[in-house]
Image (tube, rainbow, N blue to C red):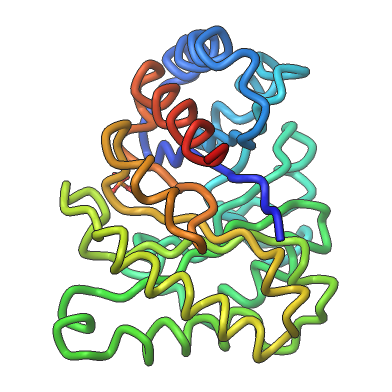
Length: 257
Ligand code: PEP
C-alpha cells in the first residue's frame, strides 16, 4: 500500500512572528518542486496566521501544536479546532510527550482532542512513545499499545483513516540520541499491527506513522528505508530552514527507492 511520506516541523515555543516569516520564506524557496513528500510546519499559535499566509499555495501546510476539545466558551487560554482552521492550518499535533509530561495530558485527553480536531476538519498528528525507564524496563510495547488503545478508543474506521500517528520515543526527543532504524521499525510495525487489530488491515495499511526523536538530515534516509516509517516529526532541526529542507529532500529521495 503506498503512503505519501509526511515530514512535519514542531517549532515548540520558538520563533517570533518575524522570525517565523523569515524561516518559511526561505523554506518555500528551498523545497519548491518537492512533490513526493507532504510538508507541514507547526509554529506557535501567535505566528500561525502569518505563516499560513506566506505559505498559501506553496504546497507546504501549517499545523498547530495543540488544541482544546471544546468549541467555545469560558476556557481561558485555550484554542479550538475552528480557530486553528480559521488561521489557515490543516494539521494539529496532539499528545506530544512534552504536553503529557508538563501539562498532565493523558490518553483520555488525547482521545478528546483528536476527536475534536477531526470534527473541526483538521488532520491530527497523534504522538505516542515510551520513556527511557519504560524501555529499559521492557515495557515499550505495553506502554505504546496502551497509548494507541486509549487515544483511539471508540473511533470509527473513517476517523482513524483521517489522522497521522507519530512514534516518538521520549528518550530520543531533543537528546541527539536517535532510535536505530531497527528499534524504530519494531515500534512502528507494532503500532500498525495494533491499529490493524482495532480497525482492520485496510485502515492500518494506509495509516501514516512518522518517527520523531533527533531526526537530522544525516539520519532521515536510513529511517525512511524501513517499511513502516512514513516520514518524521522534527523538533530542533526544524528551526533552521536549510536543515529542515535537507530533511524533506532526503526523505523524498529515500521514499523513491
Ligand atoms: C519533537 O519534539 O517532536 C522532536 C522530535 O524533537 P527533536 O527532533 O528535537 O528530538
